[in-house]
Image (cartoon, rainbow over all chains, first blue to last red; front, side, top):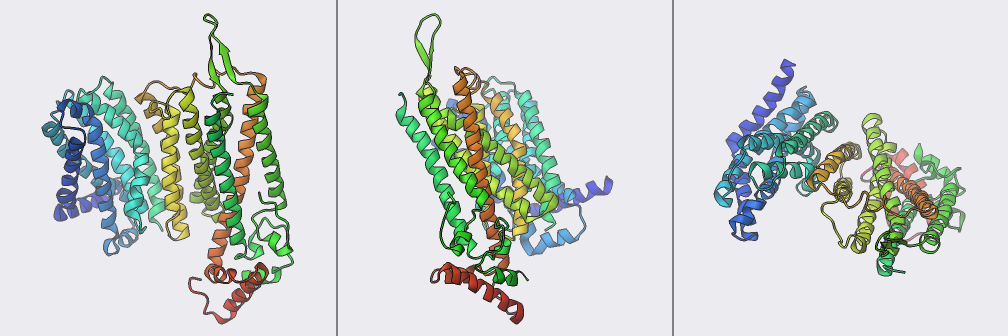
Length: 224
Length: 60
Length: 283
């Protein structure tokens, strides 16, 4: 188990180091996600009460749209300079490769969420009622988004139409995550009277299913 | 009968779409059949009179 | 459907076979009988309220359910076949499973679209809305439809067939495994469903109503079988045409020659390839 996790960490570290040096997510995806929040503000009128009510849903739509960009970026890294071939020849297990990539995407999605929560506080004037629930639900949903995103990013890579295909493949699969995470945030931000913890439970099941399926299906995708 | 408009629309769309889809499948099948030797069309029970020799030759 | 008569060569250039033609005839008959059952022999859903004596129910809108419910069940069956075939693709890796999965997904998506449309048209008079966001089955079916729209889009990309087979199989399996999650989440999301007891459960089920619904299942099953069979054969032909690498050349000639001539030219070209070695582009 030791070397296996070390391999996964090696891949994650590599992806994160590339991001730290290229700053594509920081300089492009993060501004995009904030832009989405601003656009929602324009579209929905500058009424704080309306924005507060819809803040959780808008937050998660912004996260999903931005995560799409992060996933495409992550998949593009491996296509450049024949890296995918090199990784395949390296003898890393597909599961370790998947977990490594997913971890890197997870870190980026969580970073996006941190920025977006800041955006909600400043732009939408929301108040956090249950910080623990907010953090746990955000992390668990982040796992689900990262797992599904990594699997579908690998799947759509190498196709000429990747940019247009990825959203229609990935977003329907994330529908339950969107519903669950929005409801959990409804509770955490006091936007609606629901039981956020049971929704977090559903998110955890989704995260588990998507991670297990992603890890086991990844082998079928990378070996060709 | 009540709701005649809804019923005509609903059933009409179902029959229309399935019929169109079926006709398109048959047409596609005919267009493709001419390009594939009969030995590769497993649902034909025996090689036909036209092109059975050619079919075998191309399979070799 | 599939019943053609003509020259010997013309008859053979179809995806039909004697058995599939029989199936086609039986299917058409079943559709006709279902139409008679649904529109002539069964009564509208009219009930009398026990205390007030008012008439209520779905009236004639109930006749939509004889096509909507069977199509819905066959949609799930088709996607189930697609999921099983996708497992077959990943385990066995033969084209047969791949063509089956593709056929089931395409036919299933046609059915699924019709289920959504008929349900919406039925819901307008009965639920008084074209679309009900809180309904579990409606939302689950919609997400399923969207997932398989993506699946078919993936199928349309030009990729190495074996790689595409595996990618598509993964997408189908993720979609099917994700569906229970979608279902759970929508059910919790709006903890009310218009579907369950308000429709089938509360219908005034008489013998003939029940029989018509049952006959609807049989008919939809026959339609599914016929479409799957022919879609499979079309898919099989597509793969065979690719394998032979003569598709383009033949299509060119097909425009200007009759079928018999085309068949002869297939043989000549293919035989020529074997000896000369400098084959067609793309072979």
